[in-house]
Structures are given as structure tokens and as C-alpha cells.
Length: 149
Image 1 (cartoon, rainbow, N blue to C red):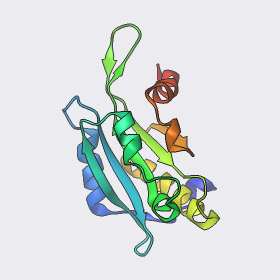
Image 2: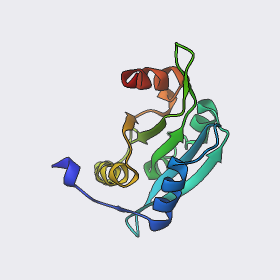
Image 3: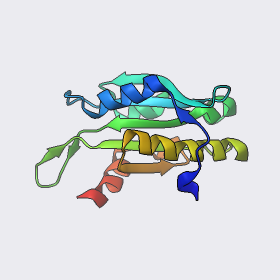
Image 4: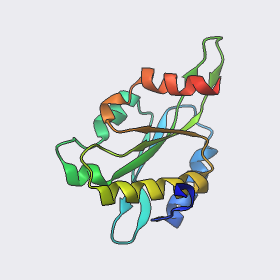
């Protein structure tokens, strides 16, 4: 039933950005940080990043003490350079959903319902979730991607 729950739609301009992002030719790490516009009930772009490390991206997320800001952080899509143990290099498109600890239950429900729509819209397959921005490390992402080898 959660797969059919749609709380917020995806903004049309974000759909276009995600399509372009999916097929980008650049090999540097990039990310799109998105949020929910609570008034319009739309998932919209919060910020775009080029040539960013996971450490830098983690620093860009709002601090846990700012609950209002944290509650607006929905997810990020990251194009990540992944060096395999056998020497191959790939650039998996990773969707990292962040529902911060301390969000009100109504907000968490809104995020969860919106997440499903976004995953479907962007045709994402590598979907990961974290409740704590401190978890977002190279080791954490490599462990998640190991499943797809």
C-alpha cells in the first residue's frame, strides 16, 4: 500500500533536471538536493552541486538542531564515481533518502509518500535511506553499492 501512497507530486522543472542529470556525460561527482514545498505539496530543487565529495555534501545538510530546516530536507540524488575492486570504474546514480530524527510524524509520512513518487518518476534503482546525516560516508555508500556488484 505504501507504494501507491502519493502525498506530493514532483515539480515539472525537477523532472526535467532529473532526466538531464540521469544522462549527464561528466564524470565528476554531482548531487541534487531536493525538498518538499509544504504549501504547494511539490518536491522541488533545493540546491545543485557539481564536483562535490560525500564529506562536503554531508556538511551542506542542515544541522540536526535546526528541526524546521531538517524537516524540509527530503532527499538527494547523487551521481557517484565508484572504483570497483577489480579496477573497473562505474558512475551509479544513487538516490539517498534522508528522513531526519526529530521530524514530526506528519512530516515523516509526507516524505515517505513523496519518496515513492520521486523514485518512480526518475526511474531510480539504487535507493538508500539514512536517518542520520553523519552516516553519509564513502564507506557507507560503498557498502550499500556492494549489493549491486
